[in-house]
Length: 327
Image 1 (cartoon, rainbow, N blue to C red):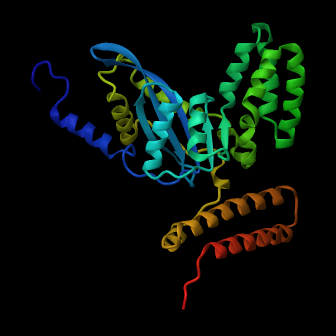
Image 2 (image 1 turned 90 degrees about the vertical axis):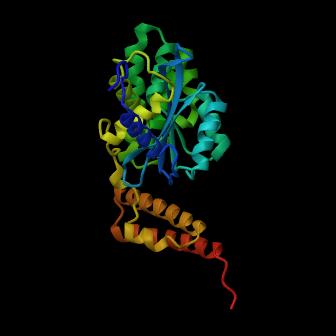
Image 3 (image 1 turned 45 degrees about the horizontal axis):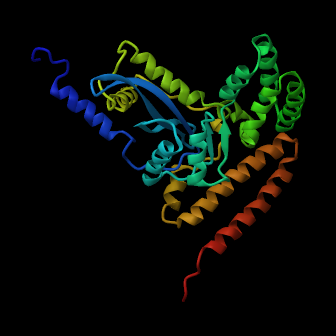
């Protein structure tokens, strides 16, 4: 290796190949769940150490496996920055996810709604909201606030969560109004996770999955207080994932998700996209409905009959969406 050179040309080519082969540029398919977050990394720009914002998107496939969808250097976490980031994902073929988890940044939520509409299921991270609540309360009330908040967000049922939410607001409106106002600011998006199967609530109510990815990346580069350039961040992360230095496990509760076998996927490949979308929506709905009926103690024959009726409705919807061929 020549003097003063830290990297051979072969190593540079390898890193570039890993970066270019990553999912940052190729087309992506639908993710059932998507997590979005931003982090700050110190890097060298114009010969000066500068903090830059790095935006990342994590997806969860139908088998529960987490995959990194994109990572980009942006100027901040404004609505415009997130809008450009999401527009790139949309251009690469990512369809509207079934469920989105965010940290509560207003720019991100506004960009998501602008792209996918108000009906998008958005979950505000309960951990971030807990930190916000603590920031509004005196230190001597932190332990009591934490106990009440966890009792509310970790209740066993949606009805239990709603009951505890009302009690939380009543209590803290009198004790510390700023805490109650901060909780109500999040609205129903703080409890969107209750739409899912209870086995998935732990994974669905926080952005911990993508936060751990950011933390693991920072831990591995902490010896370099300043990275050489802005492009180093995505290159290093893709290389670490490709080499297996950073691994992402499956999310909790993925076994309860509706799934499609490879054989069936191949069979429906030639069908119109509208038909496939209705079929997948029906499968999600019927799987969730069946689990709820069985958990409620209904006889199996009753649950099966109810599912058969719903299936007939989805079959009718598919029939109406297909234009019959003229003889």
